[in-house]
Length: 112
Length: 114
Image (cartoon, rainbow over all chains, first blue to last red; front, side, top):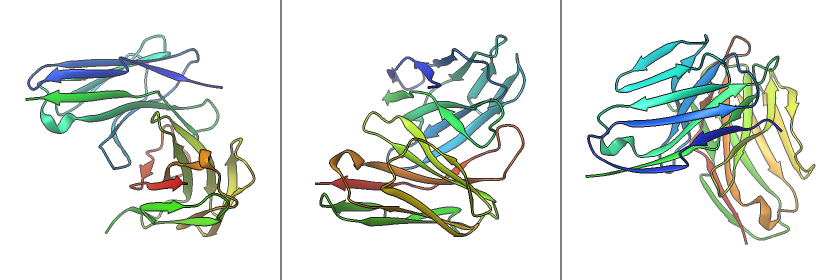
């Protein structure tokens, strides 16, 4: 079935460092979403992207919708301890706006 | 004032038992979902309901039966629980339609089958 692959699978970084992660698909997506899941909680939407090439920011987070529409990138600048969690990309399959496919996740650990 | 609330948060039960997880949303959304997150944290949709009608039913064993008494509630009943059913089950809701409609998740229900 449809799968979104994220890399890296996990990251250990120091506070203050910048973080980059990406999400790729074998199929075209018309929307890319980035979610964060804190430990013991449900995923929360961070950024939504609706157009190829779009670059959108939310505070220290910046996400880009790849030109090919088969990938997306998320950057976090100046990481802080509360950035710890699992970051998921997600996208609706074409024609099924209500069915989101989630990526494999990138687990972020931030050390002081 | 929780947007999507599900109960119980933790559930430990024996194989073969029947259990239910309840979900309610107070966002006025017309679409609700159940997602399953396995031990590798992979999130997969199980069911989706729109205005009490089933619209998505992934390949889920028929031991799992969702029930939507009204559009604000979507409960999940599981019969004859198996060890492999151990996972975190997330309820979610959204407004139907539109590109990438934002899905709001509950806090999850941790099910452990022993």
